[in-house]
Image 1: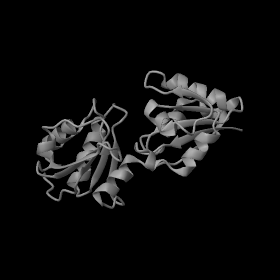
Image 2: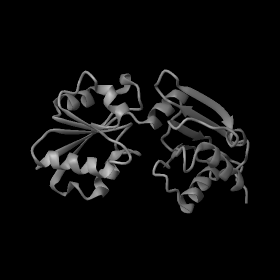
Image 3: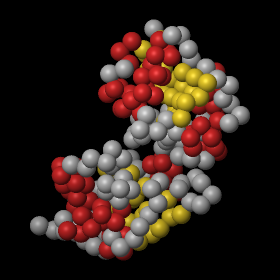
Image 4: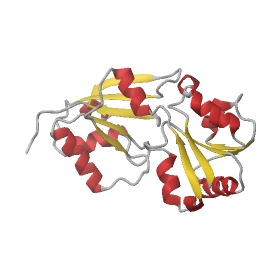
Amino acid sequence: MAKLNIVGVGPGSPDYVTPAARKTVQKAEVVIGAQRSLNLFTDDIKGETMILTAKNLNSALKFAVESAEKGKNVALLSTGDPGFSGLLQTVLKSGFVKAVEVNVVPGVSSIQACAARLGISWDDACLFTFHEGDVSAEEKIELASCIKKGKEVMLLPDSRAFPPREIASFLIKAEVDKETPVFVCENLTLDDEKVTSSSLEEVSKQTFRSLCVMVIKANHKEKG
């Protein structure tokens, strides 16, 4: 059966690209990914490339699968780890991969990088991703519930649909203590990385860059 490689490229810095990811890209005859992902493999890419964008996502996935079906070695680059807010779910739901085997090369996710930077264990943390842009009322209620139950939350905001300031405002309206500690980690592993330590109230007044991870510390002041 034809094989499609989905390669996790890490949170952004070339230092966090795994050797396995580089080897997979070096062997690929077709490499597809966002421009910033392709830039991480300038010296590794030997085959054909295709820039992946939000607008050509479906056609790019179809091209990737068709290339694999023709016997070509294909690498589809996914920022972070493909399995968390990455391309794996998109590929599996696309309906294009019925005739190909999907091989996942894991990568370092921004969630992992954030936990490491803050020196926290995330064994029991509630994880959320709002990168899809379509945030349901149920997801918002679950988010507030986790915090009220004393759970630590790590989440990937959507810079347009549900940015950190709107998340903070929603939680305050949902009667989460406005003084609840919050960390926002921007551009992790990059030269302009920034970590902001604040509170829900202060975050509700601020704007952050699109590449960020938000950590909301456990709140034991449940209201109700």
